[in-house]
Image 1 (cartoon, rainbow, N blue to C red):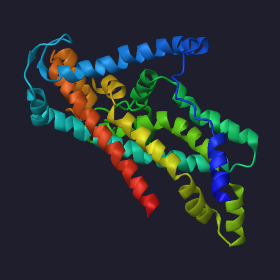
Image 2: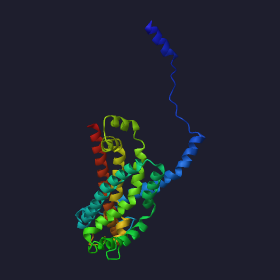
Image 3: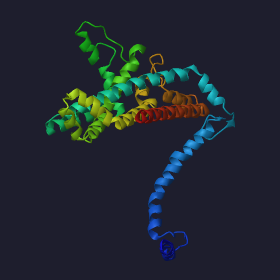
Image 4: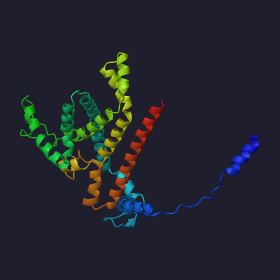
Amino acid sequence: METKTNLSMKKNVEIRPNKKRKFTSTDWAGYMFSAPLVIGVLVFAIYPMIGALVLSFQKSASSFGGEWIGLSNYKFVISDSIFWKSLYNTVYMGVLAVILGVSFSFILATFIHNIPWLQWRNFFKGVYFLPNVVSLVATSILFQFLFNPGKEGLLNFVLGWGGMDPIGWFTNPSFSRFSIVLMTLWGMLGYNTIIFIAALTSVPRDLYEAAEVDGANWFKKWLYITVPYLKPIILFMVIISTISAMKRFTDVWLIGGTAGNPAGSLMTVVLYIYRNAFLASQMGIATAASYILFMIILILTVVMLLSNRKSNLD
């Protein structure tokens, strides 16, 4: 009985040959609308990346190619002490900016999110996001006034009330990198805070209520509920901040110039690339340094993603 039923079911099944789907007018319209974006990506992103990779294996004073020299440009960059100093400065400022920026903005977002009055929450959101609207050029000019090395500098003027001597915030190599980090924090704090505030609204209230029943105070709820629940967002902000920190250029160029003064303490990897490309006319060396920086950023990103995945599995 079962065999007859199965045979009758197989006969009723229609076997349709695989036919290639024809393009309709709607499909062509979609391709036409997406074509400008695709062409823009190919021309202004993919093609320059491939061209820069080829150029990194050539000895060239321009972007039009030159003599093929293999890995010589990469060997020069790796053996150049200025590159390693610039990489140290970049990592030094980047680590401080990422740790302080992400942690401070997350704590600040927690306090703003817990304000019971909606008007005050919106007020503080606007106040802390305002620096993000200001351009980096204007921010650099503002902090040059605040961190002026003389007594006329606002911060040194305040420190003078306590009998302290003026500090060369941007002129002393011991303080210049940390001063750049402070300027970066002022600019990035608002953006990070808004992202964390938006993420905090996604935490279920049931978890906090259950923790309150168990007698957990506000700190334990924040530490054992809020932080683990927002771990993907924290990782995202760390990765984005790390990429931005490794590409630091505009602020150090405005403050320290092309030499990364004082004493090269503000020389970053991107500034090193800029010097070789547009001042020394060594496009091959500049593109080689660019791809080395790209690999460093890629490795850091992959390591952070894998470490987060391993911690989730544990």
